[in-house]
Length: 201
Image 1: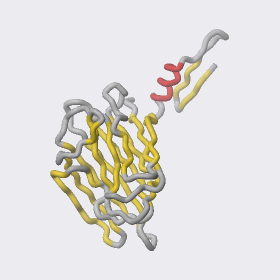
Image 2 (image 1 turned 90 degrees about the vertical axis):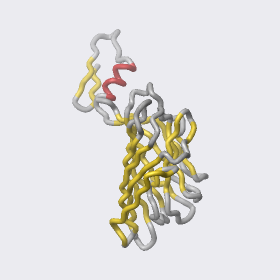
Image 3 (image 1 turned 135 degrees about the horizontal axis):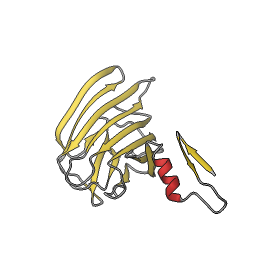
Image 4 (image 1 turned 120 degrees about the vertical axis):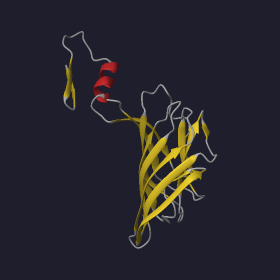
C-alpha cells in the first residue's frame, strides 16, 4: 500500500502491515505548512474567544489566525485583539502597535500606540459589511515577548474597500495560552475565526 502527499511517499508492504496514525501524521506535517487547531463562530456577541487554545507542548512556535467573513450588525470603526496567559485575557497597558490603513478615499494613513490595553487591528476604518483577513502570531512561549503582524480588510458603502496592515508587540514574557478578537461594542452576526499552527519543518 502506498500513500503519497506532496512529494513524499510512504509505502508499506505485506498483507499484515498497515500505516499507523503517527506515520500519516508525520507525512502530512512534512508536506503542509499549517495544522488546524480550532474554529469559533462569531455570531451572537462582540468577542470571539480563544483564551485557552495555545500551550507549550503543541509543537508550534507560530500560529496563523484567519478572520472569515465576520459580518457585523452595524458600522464599527475598530477590531481589537488581546492575548491571554493562563486562560486570562491581559487587559493592562502592555500593548504596542503600528498600522498603515486605507479608509475608502483616504489611503496611506498611519496610526500607532506604544502603551495601549489592546492591539487595534483596524483603527478608524468604519467597516459596514464584514471583517476578513489574517493574523500571524509569534513568540508565544515563556521568556519571550509575543508579537503579531496582520492584514485585515472590510467593506464600506459605495464599493469602498478598506484595509489595515499592522504589527504589534507586548511588554509581557509569560507563556501565552490564547487570545480574543473583539469589536468596540457592535455584535458579530456571522462568520468565524480559525486557528492554525505553523509546522516547524
